[in-house]
Image (cartoon, rainbow, N blue to C red):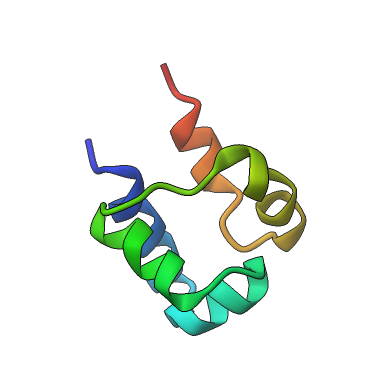
Length: 68
């Protein structure tokens, strides 16, 4: 099973989005996206839940994160 960071990168790449575009869409830094994808940090689910939910860019991540 891929890590959350790997899944973020996979979904971002499938949508042909750059890290910059995703960061701007979620109102976070490019560094944050890079760190998520490299596994150095994880997205703060509470801080970014609304942003991801309303962005329609990576909503699938939440289904993946909440899987038992």
